[in-house]
Image 1 (cartoon, protein in one colour):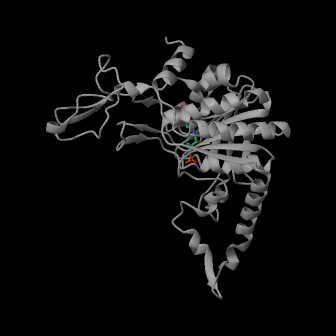
Image 2 (cartoon, rainbow, N blue to C red; image 1 turned 90 degrees about the vertical axis):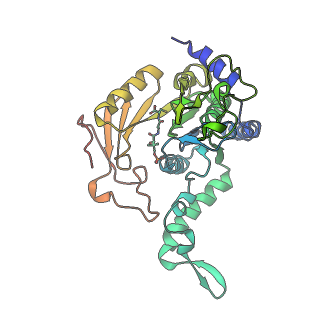
Image 3 (cartoon, protein in one colour; image 1 turned 135 degrees about the horizontal axis):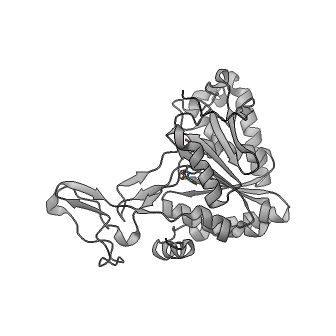
Length: 339
Ligand code: 9Z3
């Protein structure tokens, strides 16, 4: 069994940091210091899916499912509660506030019309848009939202580690709300091919990136005959490191995503015990919009469900569990109902 600290050292020694890491650290350092001085609670919300590039000059990649609805919606709720929020999200996934008018089949332009050569918002959309605009303006005026982005799993982990270290001095005033869908497997840099994988055998590459130590293992992506073979390695388990090494006194809320209802609670409990997080929120891909299960040491297992009659789309077209005022919490131990 690999020592997690050694796995961490190896990972960050081998996987190059994102180009914008220093810029992100500078922004986050100022943000954390300012809100720490104001005595505010701070939460790092992660959101969206991470990618796993298959080539160094990336044309193909493996993606993790997530639109960013959970993260962007939750960030708005934290902001409403007075938190300062670092929103670490997958580039181009949903953002707090603008999510109400983006990524929909309806364009934001559909909410507007021309009135005497000026742009105005349609009468029917005025109340909702005014409400969103006021929240957004308020948060912007207070400088309480910092938006950072990642694309690959390696960028995500570098950003997570550095931001967590900056938040460490806040102790339990720092929360980590890990809604991003993070890849479990990846292509290590020293086994990554440099150029686009070729389907034509005559053009197939046998060598990896020039920095790579090709004597260790063959490229992780290679053609064998006409087949493409992808040989991924496990991403080291960082969820424990977050608790032990990077931000040991922070409050950690992580999400567990499954598709098989019969293992969801078991896996969430396992994560709670293994990683010593404060709360693990389990959800199933098919029902995540209206039911989640909270698994914690204090309360055991608690399902939260949006009542059936509320499971309609909001004006933004995005049904949302977090956004529902009358989501019910119940203590039932039953397996989630499938819809
Ligand atoms: C989640 O389970 C999120 O709730 C969703 C949200 C990704 C399902 P959307 O963005 O979806 O609203 O479309 N996130 C965590 C997924 C994850 O990768 N968890 C890891 C795991 O299950 C632990 S951090 O192993």
